[in-house]
Amino acid sequence: MGVRGSWSKLSYDFFFGAPIAKPQGYRTARMTSGFNLNASF
Image 1 (cartoon, rainbow, N blue to C red):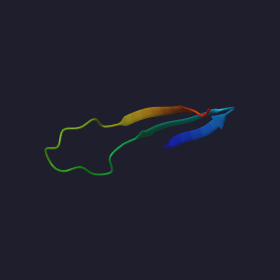
Image 2 (image 1 turned 180 degrees about the vertical axis):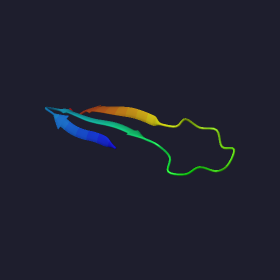
Image 3 (image 1 turned 135 degrees about the vertical axis):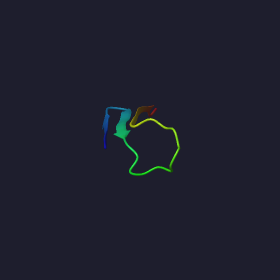
Image 4 (image 1 turned 30 degrees about the vertical axis):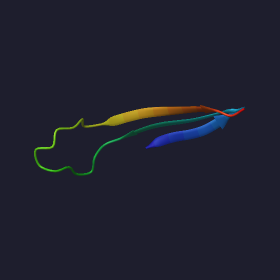
């Protein structure tokens, strides 16, 4: 899931997610999240 948009000369992307399935014994976080911010000039 995430949100993407722009304002003036900035664009942004916020997201989060969780794995649907993972291999047995594979250690990883239950959820992940992040963001991206870009400026155009």
